[in-house]
Length: 434
Image (tube, rainbow, N blue to C red; front, side, top):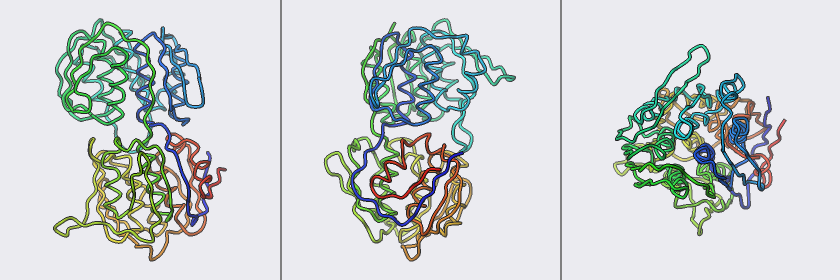
């Protein structure tokens, strides 16, 4: 198990570039199964979850070729179903949350899918109901082998239908869309997720020959086609990394320019940091965060305490609440953070309390942060990363703290952030991997 040793108190300075979006590329890679033609994808981040999915595609029989530093080609002419029934496939798939999005493309194109119970972050229960019910509505049949925790899904021919999703699940919507593009007839999905990453998937599928309308709304209409063709696609910059870098700049009192952020696809993220008093400027497609001695949390118009909560797009992504919580620890004022989606994601706050933060964990979903206003710094500490987003939040806390901190289980951070210590050390951080 690897660890980071972080020497706190160093200011950052310069430019930093966000990587390609993890939550987009996992969908895009799975979508390459929908055609036998070559699909070329650019701006692929070199992170653990993505590399594991690429290797899984190779093992499944997909021809994968690395074209450049962040570019790959995928050609899925046929699948190795003998491998899909193997224990090795089950083991690899169960450790990778993104493997669930193989379901839609496999059932649409090959009429059969074998999917193991997926893994990922330990942040609470993550339902698969939306995925399975949506694809069942298209005519697929499910069988669950409890001894191997394996789902076998079959369909002679998927047929389009109307469906109202019980939740606006991003990966659930992506799975249903990927199944519906090759279904017979018209599929209408209401309460669909509409995050930029899902918009990117739909735009790529349309370039491949799909007929999807309503993109960027919560009502998608998909007219099924007989086949899809190859295309070329470039992944958006990762909005979670952009938000993480804004938080780092604020906590370490740094001048930082975040380059090529695709500002129009950040939604409410910049405004959420402004509500904490963090100053930032849009400069063309860059974000400049100036060094601030202090930043003050806004109140609502009636004077009541500020509440920041996650919500489906265009609301605030839940992946950034951990970072916003850490940033609030050094602000002036108080804020209530409401994490609605996952019941275990706030449990990392006990580590911040050990560092000197003033946080009241009200219940598994809500925490009140009383900001220090920089009257005293967080203390260096010894901690373990429970998931990707808590891991980066703890790293930000350690970078701003007095003294030396250690973060163990940084494989969780590696799952979502490419060479994070190398890029941060290049602009003034002091992080050592051991």
